[in-house]
Structures are given as structure tokens and as C-alpha cells.
Length: 368
Image (cartoon, rainbow, N blue to C red; front, side):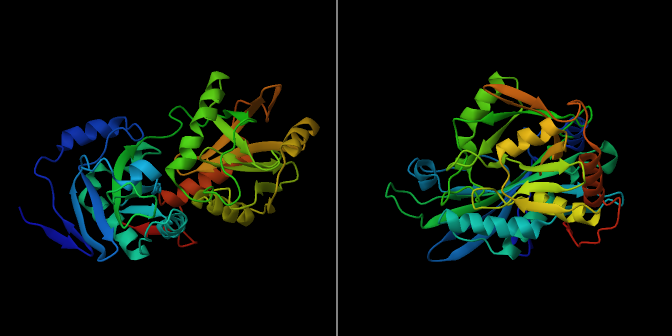
């Protein structure tokens, strides 16, 4: 079999690739993160050689020694983004440079090696270029190819110290519309017993430990019929931070939008930053500041807070319909439909991502 080379990644196609019929079957009803494309991109690092041996190979298990550092000391980080097919058949992703920047910040916080931006982008292009048949066509609605870059510490040994070797890998999975039957407001459980992150911790890094810590409160929220969990700050238990994996926005009757400021305990979302820019273009005053849970409650009670929504890569924008806690609950709007601000911003962002409107910001990056 001929091994082709593109940039820093050797391309080694598998012989038993999925048939076109099988791919079409998956794309008819893609479920997030359950079926993966034929290949994965990987490049290794060690203290002596730096980044080396980049390749795109068959997707499959990664053999690892039981004493690898990632299993014992949690040295791992990840990212999430999507590839979109436009009407002319070309394939694009959205602001991947920002993901690469955040990946580097996460690596520094977890004492992992930084992946150069060109290597990060080359890995995406090499994988999508080979598996482009897995990217859904634009006539399938809000479907895309979800891309998951991640890095794990691979040094073998039980000493508590930064690993001297690591692997950077990218895998991909076709994803359907987050809201299969239309955008619906979600119910949020206010976590009063758990914190997501503390000052000086890893809240601003996209690492598995943050998400693992959110699972117990998520389970608690689900027992109360909620879809997501909202976390308060770990010091005073007063300031709203974020959901388990999404940033929050609060829309007031006068058009002002407030979002919790980045304090080092909140993930700096790429979607968050994009929404702030689009909202300001649409004439909204967007304020980044501390936002208390009492202000949330009082704003709804007074009728001044008219919309609340969350944002992230998977759902883009998710309206929040209800907030529940141990002693009460409140409803935003009618609790049944997305508000006009959230709906308008969501449509504007999707139009850019799918190439339906001009990208005046230079946010799109062509992959194939």
C-alpha cells in the first residue's frame, strides 16, 4: 500500500474502509460521538525528539501500558470543533486557530507539551481530507463532522511528575442536529453543593478532570428532571460561572446582554467570543462582569431579564427555560420557546458556519 504524505502527516489509508453505502446509512441519522470515521491522525512527542512521526492511520484502539501517566495523574486535554460542508462541496471549520490557542493554554496548565498551531491545523486537514466522505451534505440540516483533538501523557512509570512523552490524536464523528425536532429551552439545575472549579485550578483548561467533577451534580440535576447544571463560584457561592460545558448569557429588556467575565475558573469558549462579536454588531451592549445568582432571580421576578441562553460547540445556542434548586424554581419567558435574541444570534452564527452568508470576520478555515 502506498503511503502518501501531506504536510507533517503521512497518509496511510486502511484497506477495509467503510463502503459508501455504510457511510450514507450513518449520515441518515448521525448520533453524536457514537460512530467514528475510518481514520485518526496522530503525532507523538518526547523530550528528546520533540513532535515527530505524524501519520493518519486506521481508527482503532491505542495500545498503552497500564502504568502510563494519563491513567494515574490525569494529564490529558482535549478540544471540540466541527467540519461543515458548504453548498459547493467544500469543507470548512470554524475558528480553529482559537481552538489551537486554547489547546496550548490547556497544555501549559496540565504540564503537557504545546502543539504548534501549524501541526494542530495540519492534523485536522489531513484527517478530514482522507475522510471527507463522512462530512454530511448541507441539505441534511444542522449536521456536521465533529472533530475531537486530544492529548494524553504516555510515559510509563508511577512517579508524580510531568510526563516526558505524549501523544496528540484527532478523531472524528458525524453529528446530527443537537435539537432534532427544533430548538427547545432546557431546564437547568443550580448546583449548591458542588463546585466546578476554584481559583488557581484548571477551570480555564479544557481537561477531563473538570468534566469528571461535573458528573455527580449532573446526576443530581437529572434526578430533578433537569438537562444541565449551572455552577457558582467556589469561594463565595454567589457568582454564576457556567454550565458543565457551556457559557451563559443573560438578555435584558433594554437589549443589554450580560455574560460572566472570564476569571480563570471559566472556560473561554470560542462560541462565546463569537456571540459577543455578533451581538455587538446587531446593536446590543454586551457586558462581561460578575453576575450573581440573586441578580438572576431578581431579574426574572421584576420582568427585566427576558432571555437566558447557553452556548457551546455542540448546540451552538441553547435557550434556558427553567432554573431549579433545592428550595424553588423560576421560568424564563414562557419556558417553551427560544427568545428572539437567542434565535437571531443562533441563525447568524449558523449561516456563517454553513457558508450561507458572507464571512466578514475571516472565521472560516478551509479543510478540503
